[in-house]
Image 1 (cartoon, rainbow, N blue to C red):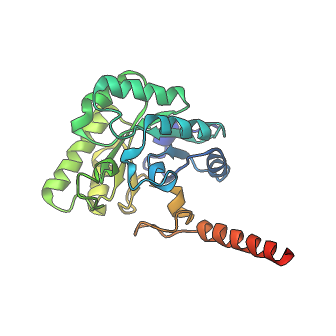
Image 2 (image 1 turned 135 degrees about the vertical axis):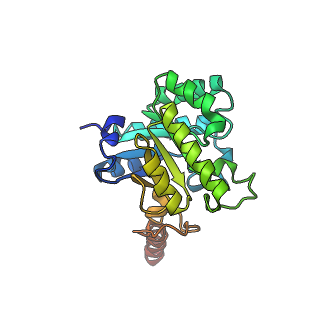
Image 3 (image 1 turned 45 degrees about the vertical axis):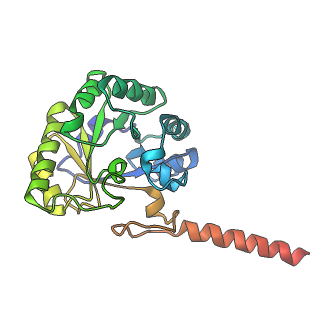
Length: 255
């Protein structure tokens, strides 16, 4: 049965769910065969696929290209995509680019920010497009913060800002929000304060409705960097390197 936004809402308070990123056909198909209920075509592709230092170089064309590849797997999972950096600076631009993602197969769109992008969020939702928010550490703004990935919600000002942003997202009609590098007590507080908003944690502790990871981090496919909150369950990067070395060695024996 196809997973929908309403399916996910039914998990609230019942059981946690998992979400993972995909950027191509085989990745999406494998995740779907594993039963992953939510797939995000994340702008993290800028780093783990395209080799950029951060997400800010990812374009709408990049997102559309990888989203279409994922959707060719016809996953049972709910598939969404990030609106990339500078793709939602005005409500009109946000709706235009959100529609482009939907036309390419996305069943929801995600963007970073809280009250400062409420006009864009309301415009997207008014267009009938399900919306997932993203609060806490915002990768598209990491350059502005000096390139450091810092925990959010450590002080009272930060806690209050996150809580008010989450409530604003819920009131606007967002069905979920990623909480990235939010202190676990604040993430738990947001979950309790927002009964209609699904909280999806990444590096924010166990007390969220769901958890999301970059698949490359989970399976060790990007061995040059692993976030401190991830323990890889496979070492596919090392396996690829080793397989290539073994194959080259076998060719040498034939000479």
